[in-house]
Image (cartoon, rainbow, N blue to C red):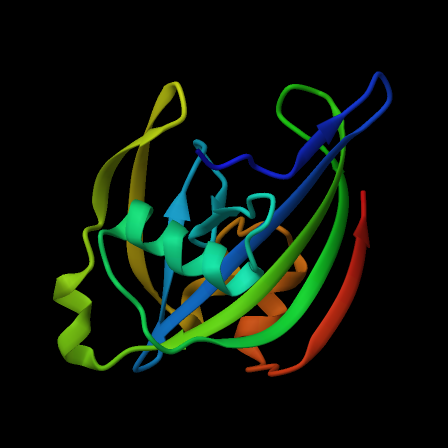
Length: 159
């Protein structure tokens, strides 16, 4: 049984996550997780698991797709108020995955996942990188990183 690295006290919540920048010819895969918010596919790192192992596991769980090659590209340390109005400190490790156009159809864009004691519905879509600026992709800095093809980054985002 996996134990996600999440810590919460009366003042703040901490999360350790991984996210995938999955690209193919000028497109990036994003997930709609709220009425007007999008994020990249990924999830929590479990205790005793490397960030790369977590990424591969999360992509298999969420997209029903097995990845072999991924490359670590950066970290965003994010401080924000979550939708439950909790102060949150999140460290997110980002990996880039470049796919052939033939792989696009292999990814399940509508997936239902059993995650511990709850069911999560994933709604993903391929988005043209030129249109990314028109979407509320969080954390906010990741849009600029993807559009500018940054291959090495570390940012701290405070809201």
